[in-house]
Amino acid sequence: MASVMISFRTTTTSKNSIPPFSLTSLSSSPCSNVIIGRRNNNHTDRFTLRNSNNRLLSSKHEATSTSASYSLDSASASDVVRSFYDGINSRNLSTVVDLIADDCVYEDLVFPQPFVGRKAILEFFEKFIYTISQDLQFAIDDISGEDTSAVGVTWHLEWKGKPFPFSKGCSFYRLKVVDGRRQIIYGRDIVEPAVKPGDFALVAIRSVTWLLQQFPQLAERF
Image 1 (cartoon, rainbow, N blue to C red):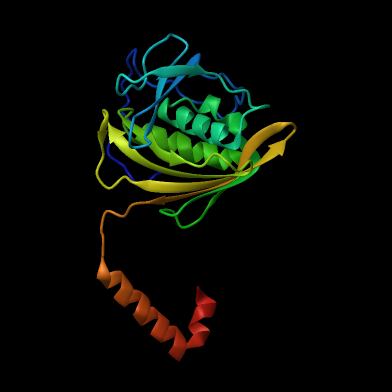
Image 2: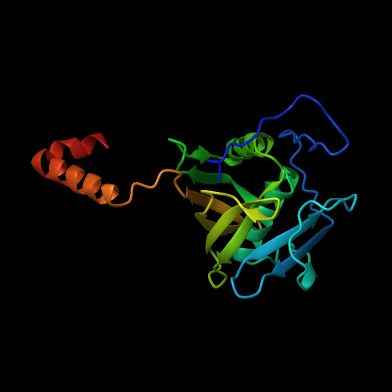
């Protein structure tokens, strides 16, 4: 998720500024209205989000939409993951706090180490949403919905409703029920590389394999 850095946080404020998120306040205050639409033929979900002032946060296409409100107590695994993306798109982290387990582990393979624990994960996403423009939104291409404890997602980023370059990705989430609520306990993001080596990647893999065959002790350093 975090490999795209296209803007910086300014010190000026305006009536449209994103409200700051405080990690000291972990109460949930979900958006007042979540409308889910599906584009025909290509399986792309779009989430039109409105805050408590009914201000439009994201929109795309004039598709037939259905209002939906998910309770964490009854939400399916895919519902929880959809709500997670909703919160990131709306830049409202207070809506995702209860979706993440206290001991959750989140891996973004752009970073050398995983983020461990709810606090560390929220700090990462706070930095993420203040780094990129609000015009950059996640659009879900496809999501699995059959499993109650694991969800796979393919997605891409869109800039003002248009596909953003080098932004395709896929994610995997594992969930468990904690105190009657289904929460994310593990997540992994893999993002499309900006540099595409093509066949050279196969050459590199073959070279490393040969090197390990000659010097197997090198594998212990990985």
